[in-house]
Length: 77
Image (tube, rainbow, N blue to C red; front, side, top):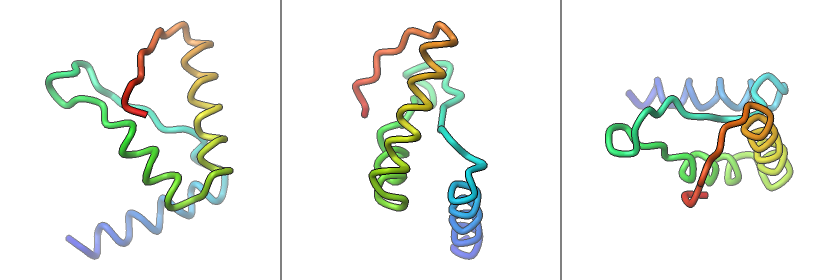
């Protein structure tokens, strides 16, 4: 399992550093069953990639939410 996590982490780093991933989201349908854990993902993003990449992701995520008409209350961030 550890080998898979290491492979996954390296793959994600390559994709983010290459500009192929520019925001994160969730497929959550309920806050009770499989709740969104965006705060954890954003903390990991900031830790692994730094403040600049973190800010780009936040800006892109906010743009997506605003332009899609999704109203979101995000206290987890």
